[in-house]
Length: 208
Image (cartoon, rainbow, N blue to C red):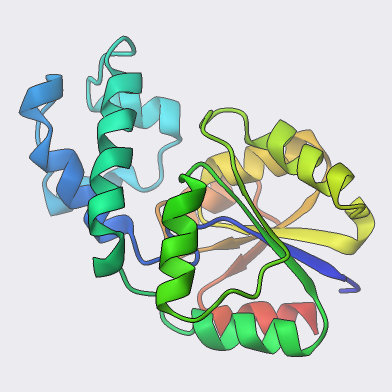
């Protein structure tokens, strides 16, 4: 696979934030009018798209923006408590040493991502783009690639969600889907993932 640039999602791909997100969802469930999610149900929901998840959890579309804003405030306070996904530091440093261009395109606030990377001494990305519209990822990815002169045939995205697959499909960009984040292999494969990996080391092997 001849690639020169790798774009990364942040939550669930680089940062091991999914356990925190699960905890916060339950913490604020009653406040926003939906039922807490048991660990067993959470496993079942990991094959769902974001709109399906909102519907299955009976989250009001009116309240959803307020819930997301609350989650972003909370993560700002807890970002220092989050760890790296296993093997991710080694992958990122290896890609950097091999000369890959690297960037982050995420719906997480930029200041949170920067704080996290500072903690792990991983200020090795060419850019960090925060797209606060959780449904606007395809335009965000295409926009940063244009801004930074990245060719589609030379670039690949790495993400953990079905919506990452959908965003990349919309702009005809190659994607590597990881199984250690929010969506499981079943959901990723069902929605057309072309490359699925179970470890950061497998990304390095796939890129060659």
